[in-house]
Image 1 (cartoon, rainbow over the protein chains, first blue to last red):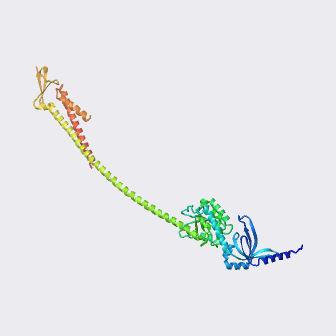
Image 2 (image 1 turned 60 degrees about the vertical axis):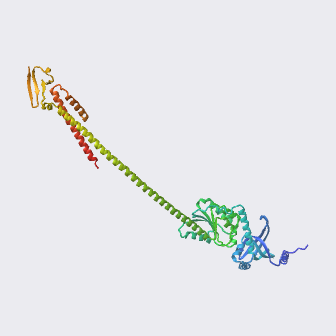
Image 3 (image 1 turned 90 degrees about the vertical axis):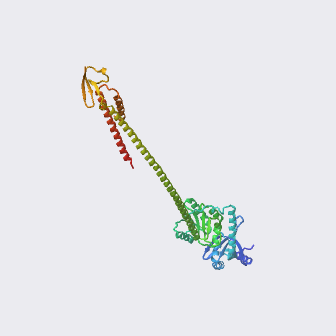
Length: 408
Length: 61
């Protein structure tokens, strides 16, 4: 049997590839690894089996720097970069190249962004359906929003423009509302997103009492940048967040699954800030109205009570006056009667004493003597019968003097 | 001696004066006592009248 040197075999294999695959072909694959080096982009392409467990094919590929510039020009820089992310499903136009020393490598000629976008969309739909089936799409929205959301736990990338826009917008609100915003820094794009946000949500959950709600903000990004927000695990974690979640992840048209599971989704960080300021304004307006109504009610009550009191005071005064007048009249009548009775008694007593005095005058001996009678006595004893007279001196008292007689 | 006692004694003396007295001295003593009692009663009535007049004045409005 012939023995050939390695180089001959390698040359032979190269010819096999060149003869059998002379034209570029389109392949679909998943990007397992993406590395950039000196302007070239090195890719590891894989195809996974049905259950996503095992890799059933794996090949290395490269996009030379010159080609990459053409692809950027053709499809747009941003979109292309979005597609060339680890984990993305891609459709690439490749030609096969076998090098005697470096082996087999696929040379990328072009890529199909629509394929990646379509794939993302299908994944998005699948996630949405799964969440909807489990009934958690409106779980976060069912949490009541506090009337004055001022204590915010913000999940953002600390270097992102979105975070500083958001903070500035809050600080510069024209009503003087004060907000506290604690930053929980996390990647908001790429494969780390789910894990980092989920960790942050757990940390916030432990300090739940210190916050009114959770805000996730990020500056603008391309369509593929948003892919992270369609991740099912991430969306489940956010739906189960301990507080209402408001997002502003910087996209104008597209809706991610995350937008569907949060309490409220707004287009930009600035819009989130404006929404919060408006919520406080509404609360303040409601409070002011309540205050006015309380004041009006209190004034009306006071007014009512005051007039009622006035009426009572007047009634008390009138009753008092009437009672007093009746008392005065009764007292005056009693006084009059008292004086009448006293005078009457005194007069009666006076009359009696006068009669007694007259009686005494009539009874006194001088009165009788004055009428010519005589009072006859013998040694002080009054004689009323001649038989009682004994011989001796007899005194006879007359009106004008005494006469002494002698009885034999 | 109050007015009632004076009146009782005076009435008793006026009754006694309508009987024959035991002797002249008793007669004079009775008349003198009666005069004394009448003076006392008059003074008491006058005092009461003055008191009433004073009270009346003080309660006048």
